[in-house]
Structure formats: C-alpha cells, structure tokens
Amino acid sequence: MQTTEEKRKQFKLIDYCQYLISSQNNYTITNLAEHLQTWSHDVINKYLRNERITARMLWENASRDIEVDEEAYLIFDDSVLDKNYSFDIEIVKYQYSGNAHDVIKGIGVVNCVYVNPKTGNFWIIDYRIYNPEADSKTKMDHMKDMLNNTIEHKKLSFKTVLMDTWYASVEMMMFIDSLKKIFYCPIKKDRLVDDSGGKEKYKKAVELQWNEDEDKRGKIVKLKKFPGAKKVRLFRVLVNNETELIVTNELDQDSSEVAKSICKVRWKVEEFHREVKQLTGIERCQCRKARIQRNHVGAAMLVWNRLKKIAYESGKTIYTIKKDQLRDYLVQQLRDPSVRMLLA
Image 1: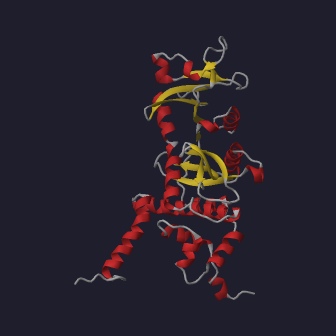
Image 2: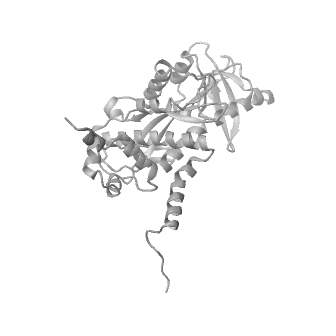
Image 3: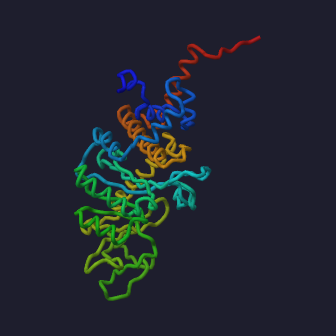
C-alpha cells in the first residue's frame, strides 16, 4: 500500500489545472516537467493517460457558482480546436471551422453555456467531444444529450435555448418545443417557408415580402417539413450590418427589437470560445493519445470557469486576471532581480 507521503507526492488534477492557469504561452507537458522538480514528463504523461476528466466534473465545479434564474438561456454551439500543425493525434479529423472559415484539422467540441439574463454572467456547464468514429453520435445527438442532462440530471432552471443555423433543423426545433422550452435561432436565407397559410407554394425565406408592420412585429410562417399546423414566428433583424432571419416558437412575442436583443445573447458563447482558446491553452496540447487530449480539454474547461469566477468576484476582465500573474512576477524581479543589470 502507498504511504501518506507517497500519495501526497502523486501528480493530481489540481496540479495540471494550476499549470494551465499559470503558464502564459506554452502548455506542453514537456514545458511543465522542465519547470518542476517533483514530477518528470513520464509521470505527468502517465497521469493524463490514465485519468478521466469528464463533463460531470466540470458541472460539479460550476454548479457551486452558477447564478440560477428561471428566465436563463442555454446556448449551444460547437468549436474546432485547431490542430492544423499536429500529426497523428487520434481524435483529430478534418472539419469546418467557423473561426477559420475553412476546413481544417482539429478536434470538434460541442459546448453548452448557461447565461443569467439579469447579470449577463455565463458559465460553461457541459461539453461533448465530437468523435463519430468512436461513438457514432452527431453534433445534434450531443446537443440533445446535453439538453436532456440539464433538465433530468442537473435539474437546472432555464427558459430559452439559443443556437446557430447549423442546429436549426426541424427535428431539433420540435425536440426543444416538446421539452416546453422556447427557442430562438437564425435560419438560412434559402430555407423554404410559407407565410400564406397554405394558399401558395413554399418559397425561400429571403424572397418573402415584408410590410412595415411585419418588420416591427415579425410574421407567422410555416417551415417546410414542420408537422401539421405547427408554425413559428419569423423576424427580420439587422445584426452587425447583416440581415438575419430569426425564428422562434414563442408565437406571442411580437417585437423584432426583443428578438434582436435575445439573439445578441448568443454571442456569449463566442466570447467563451475566444477566452478559452486564448487563456487556457485548450488547443495547445501536442500529445497523440485521445485520452490525454480529452483530459486536456476537460482541464482547460475547469480552468476557464475558475478564471471567470475570479473575474466576476473582482470586477476585472478574465484577461486581466491571467496577465496579472506577469505583473506580480515583474514586481518581484524589480524588487529582487535574478539577473542584475550592470553599467560600465
């Protein structure tokens, strides 16, 4: 049996997370081992090969800090972790990246973000690695799993689901509707719709005619392949100088301005994607094994939630929290330099 001292000296999750918090630009295991005297590269690698950092662990940490609200939003979106310069990583595949606007080599992650509508604060509460070769699940399957998990297991209150055009399928919208939840999502301009009550053929959404009242209040339409008399309200709104077509099952909500403000909340997930990539090294693990990559992603998610918690409590930005560590280093070096300047 291991002694207490041997257990104390074991490499643990908190040690790896502390590394991701503290490091500013290099997040490799080699770099970590070079800056430690306690654990070698092999010890850290073995830990990451055998550990299982899961989405459940993320929830257990996030649940203590979330500001729950019955009017809250759940946002679903996926992100591709860029591995274009990496080779032989087991779960890397070619896939489209919205950030790169191209097909790249990467690891796909479907994320679920919880937003408090009163404070504007948000948390990553769930995620899934997109790896259909291993589990045969689509991104839609992952989104459904996370929705069900939020309701049945997390027991987390929320009202509205926000998602991008890619997830705006008939199946997904009807699934959200069956959960008695509201959805808002943009649709593609060539989506076939009918605003005539069945009197005319379906036409592309971009070809619809809008009067002044409809521009303000939206219009009731039927999306092609929607069952029976099921309809949605369609809004035409201007977002970032581009016209977006937004649909919702909240039929009695008849303000385009309200729809626009709700859809702006969706950008919280883009804020999360940007921060987690820039501040946690989530894309920077070079290990080939799928298990290590999964654990690295899980640890990076935990680190982001921790940094965000500190940011909320201090009133600082998450970027300031990260960079303040360098400030502390500079203060220490100016006080007691490890390399002293000399002049002739």
